[in-house]
Image (cartoon, rainbow, N blue to C red; front, side):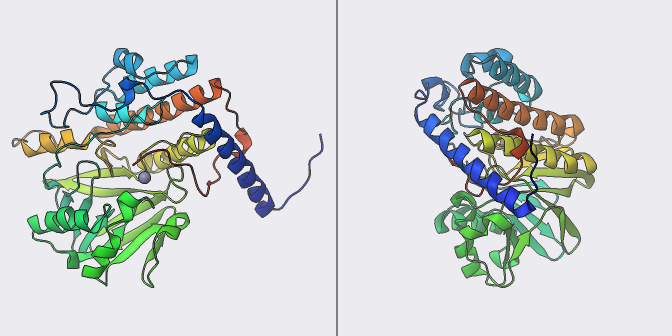
Length: 374
Ligand SMILES: [Zn+2]
């Protein structure tokens, strides 16, 4: 065997070219795959229309996963079984949404959740699909994501902040998890209300928004402090190339906890992107383990069973637990569920003939194919 020396840049360029080729081939293969079965189309579960999550389908256990998951390969079945065992009890909507052997199984519209204070000074003010988090610090508000349009930013972000005595002028920093329209679309409107608002986003996603002189490129392991509050950003390529995730401290009626929020939800469909995503979960776990995270938050309601949890929180009685506090075991189960779902999808694709080079995993793909929102 001949080993040739190449510069790092050349290696990466060659790897990117290889991955782009592999991704293109996978997209072509996806186009030939059979249509999405009715069981994965995300219909409202009959009789459950008025439940907190609007009747979104759920998977609670291995039996239900085998019924609707649609995995056929031995690896796909084994991994999706593990996912169901790990997370079905705590995140049944998320599990249905995440283990998507058939791309296209997606969330369905539901009634918007009420704006609510989830932790001390941490507010959930999103839509039925997108959780928006507003964190009140001693020196203003940090917003996580910005919804899709001026109209929904006005109704949900501005309206939601007002419910807690806050205004768009209080937003010092809007952290954008990734450059998809349902997270960036409200930025121009919020900027028009507050020209001093800074926007932070991962380097490889900045192509999607005009970058202002005071805006921030979020880097891996960066600590951002506003007043008495510090949030850590983690680069987690996979959903988009520049996706960023967060860990930050919260308090539940004075009791400290550590929150984790992964910045991209929908799984890609091609194997190289799935592999990148899985590796990024590992990187994220390096941080959640370090800070001993015991809270799972998401930027989508299908990422943390958010509609159900907001409804539970709204009727929480004194002394009852906060439904977002899942403990160390919960954070570990969440990671295991997600990892196993990605692994199930990888196993399924490979069993269908997809292939990949294990030596080239982990290099950001500049434009991962996007099959569906979010
Ligand atoms: Zn997205």
